[in-house]
Length: 388
Image (tube, rainbow, N blue to C red; front, side, top):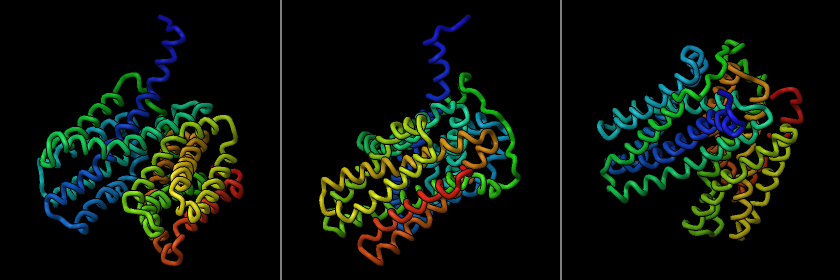
């Protein structure tokens, strides 16, 4: 039976909606899990050193599994691999309250990190593959927006569950597991098509670096400044005379900007040259960071500037991924996403250290570091005319 145009539109949109919801639910679990694990370990009597060491296990799991993701994708197929990773995450979260041993938690955090890495890399590359070129910017912007919304909603869900049942309840873990099981049903649904299962054309991940230097550099930039800003922006404001509450609010307002700008800038990317859009976004981000030392002494100006700045800055990643999605498919695209995830880990590691060194030199070092990093990135699309 032939479908009417509205029905065909709904059917064709179902895969996109399902995978963007995966981003939302994944972000929700990540936003819920980070503070939840910290509070649980505080309740068990552990200090910041042990909490930090346990938190690092998530990153270790992610980095350990990353080089094998292209092979896993080819062996199982993205759909089956993401489904198994979601089920593993749900089971792992359910085990935390049942096995309240810190040493067991170290292993569980590593397993959870590996499973989350598979979910993130394969779901985003999958969505990029099945999205037509003319809509890629908007769709990837929607995915990034919902991922950010989910991360922001996680702490709110934790607050609600703790208010209802108290700190000793396993309800937060149960909610996270249920959210992942619901997401598993979406991924396993028959209307979600399998992306092409073509193997990577190159045997080593590092051999993809010359093919996609801009997207790798964009990931490195986003990770460096994101980790630096979330670590030091509130401190920068407090050193400029802000109260702790006002400084924390400034950080929250900045992070909200990333949720507001992704889709509009993705829409612009679908209608203009994405390469020149990247140059423009980097230039605006660099110029905006140069205004931080002025804005930090005017609360209203700082709120508006940081909200707009993070919206522009975070969109660099969305546009860069749209560029690489135009050029690569199948195993090649998954390999580039995997290499990007490794770049993210490296950026998140060095970003706070570079920011701290800059702030030790000058009180406005965070602003100068952000401006310099964005300006340097903006030169890449101009210098590398043929590379993604």
